[in-house]
Length: 322
Image (cartoon, rainbow, N blue to C red; front, side, top):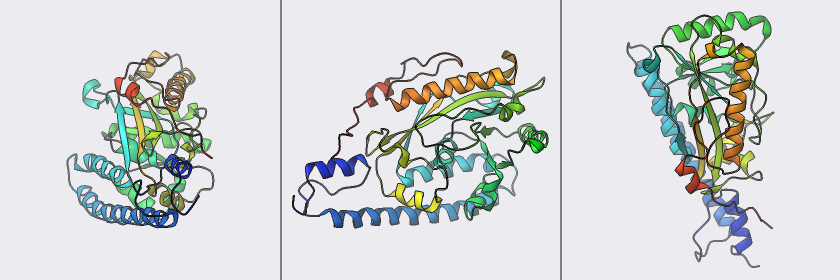
C-alpha cells in the first residue's frame, strides 16, 4: 500500500472530518496528522485570544446601560463558531419580544456544549444552565459574562428557580431552556421533563419557540451514525479533550431550525405543552439526521419538506469504509 494515502484510507479520513493534503502532494499519513494538529493548535490559539478580548468587551458592556450586553454575546458566539470551523444553517424565523409584546423562551434539544455556540450565534438570548457549570474553570467565567441563569434541577428548589427565571424574563431577557436536562450522543432526543416548562404556566406566560439543533455535516458531507458522536458531549467526557478532537476536523456543519412559536395558553396543561414540543423537535431532528428536507410547521404536526437548501444538501454519506 506504500506510505502515501490510498483511496480507502483517504475516504476513511475524510469521513472523520480530517484535513488531508491534496491528491498528488508528497505528504504521508504521519505528516498529515501533524499538519492537522498544527491547524487545530492555530484555531485554539485564535479562540483563546478572541475569548479573552471578548471578556474585556462584555465586562465593560455589563457596566453600561443599553442593549450592548445583550447583542455582543451573539457576535462572540458567531465568531467562535467560525473559528472552530462550524457553519450554521438557519431555517425559520426568529421570534422577538417586539412582535408579541411578551418575553420569549426558546426550547431546544441538547447534544453538546456546541449548542451554546450554534444557538447563541443566531439568537439574542441568555441560557439556563445546570449549577455544575459554575465549577468549570474558564467556562464559568464565559457563562457569567453571558449572564447565564443557573438551576439545580432539584424538585425542592423548583419554585424558587422558576421565580428567578420569571424575574429575568420580566427584566427584558429571552432565555433558552434544554428540557432534556442532560446531553446525549446525538442519535436521538431524550424525553422532555415537564418541570422545565413550569415557567410557561400562569395567566401571562411567555411565548415559546421550539428549536431543533442537529450536527449534520462533517468534511462537507452528511454526517451519519458512525461519525455524528464526534459532536456530542455527554457522560463523563473531558471538555478539553472533546474540544481538541473537534478542532482537528474540518467542514463541520449544523442546522438550526426555528419552529413556529406557540402560546402556552393554547394547551390544556404543562404536560400537553411538553409533549407537543418534544414531538415537534424530535421529529425534526430525526428528519435532519436522515438528510431529509424540513420545514417550520406548526407544533404538533409532522415535518414537511419545504426548505430548498435542505434538498440541495441531501447528499449520500460515504460511510462504506474499510
